[in-house]
Amino acid sequence: MIWLDNSRIIAIYAVVLLHVSAGIVTGNDVGTEYWWVGNVYDSAVRWCVPVFVMISGALLLDPAKQEDLATFYTKRLSRILVPIMFWSAFFLAWAFLKGVMKGNELTVVDLLKKLLTGKPHYHMWFLYMIISLYLFTPFFRKIVTHSSKRELSVLIFISFVISILNYAYGKFFSGGSKLFINWFLLYIPFFFLGYLIRQDNRNPKKSILWLVFIISIIFTFVGFYIMAINSSLDVGLYFYGYLSITVIPMSISIMYILIDMEQTSY
Image (cartoon, rainbow, N blue to C red; front, side):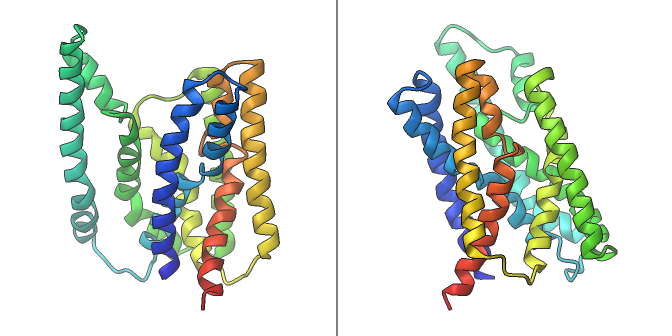
């Protein structure tokens, strides 16, 4: 399906914009003109990671793909395992050398912590999260094969509730789980939702989709500002989370919008 390829391309550009604007948000005082520019742009592309996860689910959870475990793992994990190993080693070596040059040499324990938290470099967390989803995908396919759309909808709803509460609790109370092997659990609802959206033959009204998308963006950057100005920047960053109450509807609506773009182009 062309819309899946187009979605990937658009999401890649969104990731680049996210990282550029994030530096503006964290590098300027809350409420300044530059900060607001970064905040608006950053809020507008927070859907990019959920869309990547939904694309993976749309493609990999198709029960029509008949593969044994060995075939699946060989095809998928080989594509991601080697890059993870190479870039993890590269960034760990870079962190060590940078520490030596600055007179703050990292210990083996420090480097191990970077690895176990899935962040040899901050942007690598996604690879550590997605590889865990891949490990469980053959078993998730079994669920898809033997479940009706209604049952999958209920599963997605329940898992979203759990993920939303888990994320909010970690952000506001406990500081969040640090070990990377737990991350994929929070993204399971997006993974299943990608498959369900691909199978959805309904055509939601374009006006409603755009309304949800725009309102979600507005609530994201306004909510971030209110919490940041009244509490702290770190607390305000809740609204940037991929499982925040504003980013989830933003991500779902843009996924349908991307599908609609393909349908209306023909």
